[in-house]
Image (cartoon, rainbow, N blue to C red; front, side, top):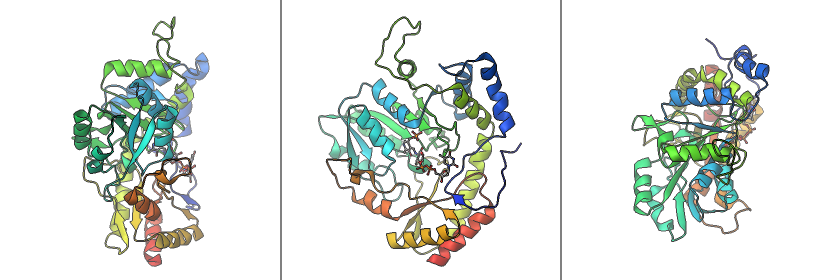
Length: 370
Ligand code: T4K
């Protein structure tokens, strides 16, 4: 079976392209919804998608929601958090906005310069009497040191919400990284390994929390819909988005395997290149969803971007700048490692339709710029 192939002339080459099943697969999955007129409200396709994705990831439960940012907000709401949440400075702004929208305060923690994840050795010094949780991010699908983080959380009676937006398919101790912490929140946005166009999911091993998340996602209704029993909102995934997910899930293993192959190809081509270092994978198993390179200086990064752009190739500066420096952050806290890495990190194109020859071309262009 093949994923959707489209005309490939390799220009322009963006940082990613969605992995899409053939259109006919999608239509077949969507047909029952079209015929019944059931488009939303946790209909049969959403329920099927939840079952299939949970089976694929080998997790007990998966609560499908409208996007990864809402999944983070729902996790905060479900845990009734009110106070300071420790979060790494090297992340997408959604981690921070979710904390702020739920009325909590983000407290920025610096990262480890090798793994690019929260530096667990710096967490304890940030804990105050107002701290309620830690929100580590599995950056680019590279698992955090979950054992150390959860030990700290237990010692200080804190909740752990993993921002697992990038981490579907990543593992720790041979089980899905999504089953760690009190709740993990993932994303199935168009740019992610498995996509539903927009979408996300909450994963918890706690049955009560799982039911609460489902109520929160649906305005806070009780099971019989006669009462409102939670302070909920609309976090529902539609049947159309679930149909996209159901068609793409058949190709998920293929996409995961392809990603690893291409990641390793880049790594081989760029290994031993002076001025380039790679993200280090120390804990668990990554899903290889992004291919970041850390350059020796921002000026070299800009030179490489210019060279690639001139050839119609558009890598992305994820995450840039470090979120603690954005102007919406009023109480500035320095996170020197995150700020430094943000200035020098570049994610290279990596997606299913990307051809091997393009990876070789990109690598050559980078080497020639250095
Ligand atoms: N936590 C973390 C750590 C995250 O990284 C994110 C999101 C979240 C939480 C929140 O999850 P969501 O609420 O988004 O589910 C992207 C994504 O919008 C965002 O999901 C992602 N992280 C972030 C890292 O990247 P951009 O600004 O890169 O999008 P854009 O439009 O530049 O897309 C990149 C390339 O992908 C384009 O050059 C072309 C291609 N593309 C993109 C879209 C949207 C397509 O081919 N088709 C498409 O539909 O944000």
